[in-house]
Structure formats: C-alpha cells, structure tokens
Length: 196
Length: 196
Image (cartoon, rainbow over all chains, first blue to last red):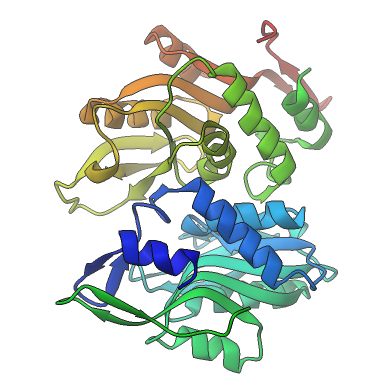
C-alpha cells in the first residue's frame, strides 16, 4: 500500500452506501503534512508535462490542489459553484452533477484566467461518477487549454468515473482506487496499481 | 506598504460598490508563493500562542489557511456551508450572513474535530461585516475551544467587522486594512498599522 492507502485504512470510516469517510484527515479536518506529500507525489507523476496551471473545483479540491500547484510553481485556479441563472459572458461554465451532494451546479471559471496557451493539471479529492472532472475538462476545452493530466486522491473504482475519463484518452492518476468496501468487516480493498 | 498591500495596489481591480477584486492572485486564481508568504506572516504574528488547530470557512478561506496550518504544524479545519434544514446533532452550527454572496448559510463543523482543549487560530480571506468570523467564534464557543487569535488577509476598514471583533476583545491581525477606494482615480488607501 502507498502512503495514502495506508492512511485510509488507518483512519477511514466505512458508512452505509459504499461510503468511506476520510473527513478526519482529507476533506473536513485536514492533515497538511499528508496533503504536502500528495502534492509531491502528483508532481512526481506528472513531472514530464509542462504544466502552466493547476485547476480544481471548490471546496475540498482546493486543499489537495494547493500543494500540487506549489510543487509545480504555477498558479492554482479553482472553479466556483454557482446556482445563479445569470452567469456573465466573462465566465466559462459547465454543468456538474455532484455525487457527494446529490445536486447539480453550474461551475464557472473567469475567462481572464484560462486561455489557449494553458497546459492544465486538473486535481480533485474524490472521483466517483466523473461529472466534476468532465465539467472541468469542458471548461478547459472552452478556453482552448490543454488538459495534460488529471490527479485524484481517492477514486471509487466500482463507479464509472475512472473508466469514463480514461476511455476519453486522458492521463488520470488516482493515488488510491477503492475497489471494495465491506461494511461488516470494515475491510477496504484497493485496486493494485503498477508502481509509478 | 507590506507585501500584500503592494500586491493589492499592483493587481487589485476596483469595482463599483466599494469592491476591490483580488481574484487574479488571492481568491479565484491564486499565487501560491504569495499565499505561502501570508502563512509565514501569520505564523510570525501569532508565534507566541500555543495553537492546536487552524479554523477557516469554505471556500476561499481554505487556501489562505493552508499555509498557516502548515507553518504551525497543526491540522486545518474548515467550516462547511449547509443549506440543509436537517443538520445532525453531531455538528456544531452557526448562521452566517455572507457579505460577498448576499445570502445566509448555516455553517457547520463536525463535533468530532473540535473540542475544549483546542486553541484556535481563525483565518479567512476577507473581513467586511464580520459575520463569518462571528459564526466561527460561535462554533468555537460551542465546543468550549479557545480562540487565540484571528487572521484576515484583507479587511475592509470602512465596514463594521473589524471594530466588532476587536471590541469583543479578540486579537485580530489583518495584513491589509483598506480604508478607502477611489473608483475614479483607482487609488486604494490602506490604514497605517504599526510594524508588527
């Protein structure tokens, strides 16, 4: 197991409905040393790309993406969720259905901060149905920017998102891919991945 | 001027309604090196407090608070905004009226991550009416935690929040206090503060 898989086993809490709560260290209370290590790991995995910007989505993507942007020495840009019907034409926008919150949002990024020269690393904390990543990819495409890669802390391997994104041809790195959650035994099964 | 005041003058954009947009470097697209410097500065100003946790509020507080938590070597905890009428009794909750978004939210923190032994440094990006900080203070009080200090990147000195928080007796450090915004000339006037 890698460092994140170990931490999930140690501190993750299984809940009904195929949910593993990592809110004690990843997405409510956060262990910054762990997040810094996540940043270094994504930097290592995408070191050969000429990344100009890290793109994420509020709110829990921000703390995962911060150390990544830091390691690459590039700006961090986060897509904002907007329920407003009135989105100015100075914004790129995409509709995203949230698995976590069971609702739809418009996500927006100012056109000022994304352009055709940008080579993006898209970062988020969880990957389930892939809708958030698809929204960010759509925004990147609207700007004419290139998506050099995507980095996810925890992928739910038994949901469709990972397959969808990989089948689209993108380079997706998920530090931990959960294949199974046994609520009775508390056992979390990770997909074996090649040493990167 | 300090490093943040200089950056506001250089890259801040004045908008009608006493608004200075800093979204190119602080709260939409973010300059991580600048944020790291903010983290070091808050660490310096509160170095004598035995901080056990940094508390902030989603979403744009997170990137300001991350480097602060990093410098102190403590967990980062962010209050989540919830429109849900059903908040479980496993959450501390406070109502916050947002100046930026012109709406009210319940903000919530899991009771699991805040307790009477905690000595908090509360961090946020903007201070206007003080409602967000008051909500975080109320949550801290619900937990029996101590608020050792509050750190704000940019305070609107012509609004009530700073006075309210200081009059409550709290140690509030704002890196930049904007006293005036002249839309015609583009001039931003900062409150002179003693060298910290």
